Length: 346
Image (tube, rainbow, N blue to C red; front, side, top):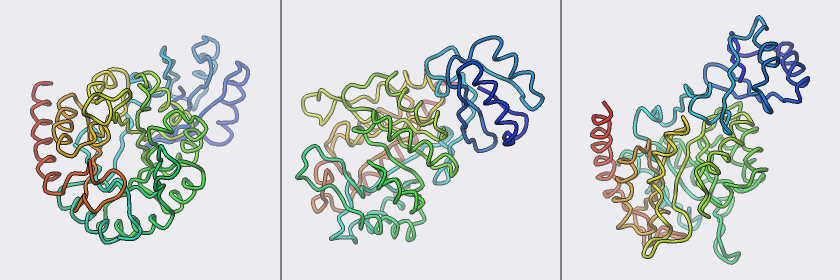
């Protein structure tokens, strides 16, 4: 990785760097940071002559080689100081809570607007809401574009940043046009490398946060980080890793709860971990326990489904969404556990 002396390289400097890298069959990827751009050498970047030639450029502060499969996501990389801020929270320094309905019902927009106000009152920092929904069966409700108007209205009313899941280029177009604050990549698309690359490229300049969910088919930690590497290598390092349960299911739960991989992720990468207990256990009564366990394991945040009246919700809300009063208590307890955890670390 190339760290420039200035905030970013000029066009002429970038052209020179690309020419040198090309001599060694490498390419240069631009990662847009909040304070400084970083230039990733994509290829075999540890060759001594390549590093020497780049290090000798007067506008280069240093060149770092990372001896790991994840050149950018590795906790020793130059991105280790990357700060992700959203909803007034510096993720990792403070607890981040993402909450809202599984699915927005365009026939009952009042339910979502009421839920948005309630989750804000409970202490939520980012509002989630399913505009479009991936479904196992093609006959299930898949969401629709007009639900986007509802979540945008909720943002206007509450001031909360919004999290929207996208599954294809059309939805990404609409989310970018709407200036979505956080784009979610769901578990079914966690290995959709073409979509990962497109999202990385198209969100690089505006610094959009990306919530990347873990692949549900028992995606290994390394495979999970490889998916994140696609996003970072294509320009956007503002990545939150989201364990959400895997297959095969554990009897009584929706998935196999996986909040316990949090320490493994912390050991390998600098990226914050935000656990989704709702899809992990799939039952509202189990969500608080799973959420608190995630915080005890070291998670930096939670992504929780919440509805003012779950029985009247659609999608997964009737079975796994908690109510706003439960969310309020859960956030308070999570803060207490986080404080206890930090004391142990000292």
